[in-house]
Figure 1 (cartoon, rainbow, N blue to C red):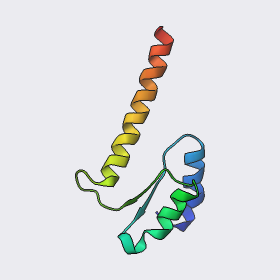
Figure 2: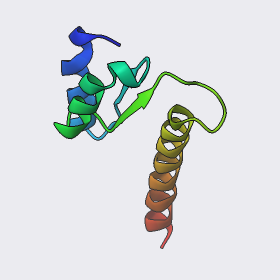
Figure 3: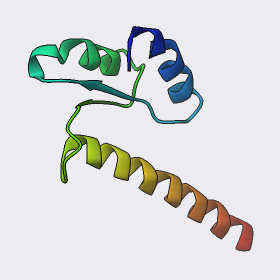
Figure 4: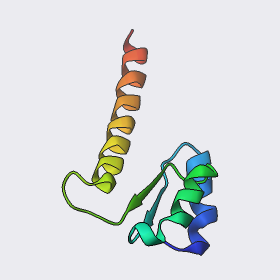
Length: 79
C-alpha cells in the first residue's frame, strides 16, 4: 500500500505470512523491487489484476502454499 505499511509487511513475512509489494508500472517499480531484494516482502508485482498476471499468480500460489501446508499437517496427524 504505502510507505507506512512496510513495517507491517515485514512483520507478516517474518511471521510466516506472505507480503506483496505492488507498483503501478515499470517506471515506478524500483522501490517495490528493492523491498523484495531486502527480504521485506515475498513478491514485487505490477498492479495488474487481470487473468494470468503476476499478481494473480502470486495470490494463487500463496493460497496453494497455505492449502498444501494444511494438507501436510493433516497427513502427519493421520499417519
